[in-house]
Length: 152
Image 1 (spheres, rainbow, N blue to C red):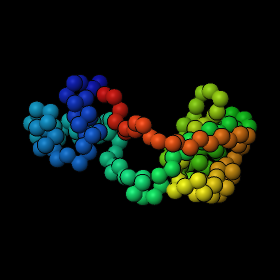
Image 2 (image 1 turned 90 degrees about the vertical axis):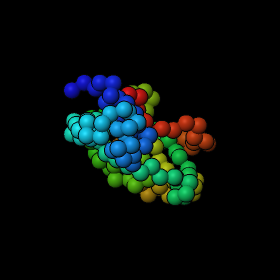
Image 3 (image 1 turned 120 degrees about the vertical axis):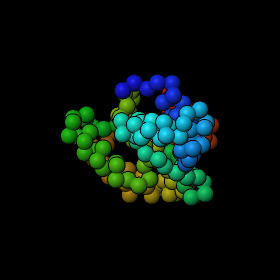
Image 4 (image 1 turned 60 degrees about the vertical axis):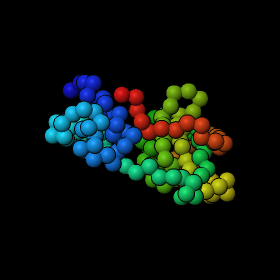
């Protein structure tokens, strides 16, 4: 089902304020509470809303280093890609893994406590990933902009 303007407004508010009460959400988009509740339930059941999460402060949790790791595999056979993806999904420090078109096959977003901690992650996990031919890591010096909100 296509999204109408009201659905989009609901999604915009929920992306920014996921813990908002139904009454406050309804008021913010000028909708009755019951109609708002029905729409949100429909957006959830149709998969537009996948989940509700808490966004944590990486610095307060001691994982303030962000590293982007470009990985090139020895081949792109389906079974190699599948084995790599299963293995990388088990690494707790990897926040994101993207199959890419370009110089690298995958780009990982990794968090660590420090350069020493990343060295541990590299030794313990990344060097053991299957079929890796080349790996290049880049440390983020500063996060200029970050959001989880999609344009709707």
